[in-house]
Amino acid sequence: MKNISAQNVMDIISEILDIDQNLIGEEYLKQFIKNIALKLDIKYVLIGHPTDKELTNIQTDVVWAKDGFANNFTYELKNTPCEFVLTGERVCIHESNVCVDFPDDLLLQEMNIEAYVGAPVLAKNETGVSSILVLLDEKPMENKNFFISITEFLALRASAEIDKKLIEDNLKKEVEKQT
Image (cartoon, rainbow, N blue to C red; front, side, top):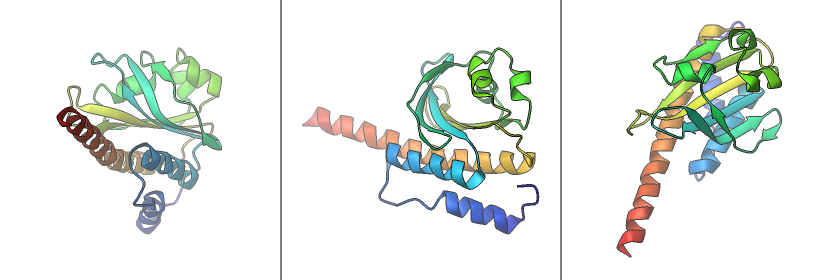
């Protein structure tokens, strides 16, 4: 992905967002991260949300790992690149050597991750962040600006879907209360 034209970027985004309109919520997000992984040739993609207001842990909502979906898990943010995503940076990228930059992140070490890009998925809640979109790979990300731009755009799309899901969940709860 070294030399990418504007048309190539638009084609890639179009392919990632080519998702059945009938899919909603978790099923939509699963197809979304699968498309990201396949179209960008990334080994791991996940969306997760903070488990507390202090932003100490992330609980994954959907995880793509190498060739398929993986079980969700919780991880501590301290000493991880994700910690920086949730404390102010729009997009945090380590196009190589992320294991060297974060030697205390045991998950990165175990997975032998070379490159990381993460973006906050913004929402209207107490923390201002509903989730985080993370792309991890075992090889360097050669076009830093491309990965920053596309991850930021995809995080915005994920935000819209997650907000929609939260609204639907809240409406369902209200209907259940009333009936």
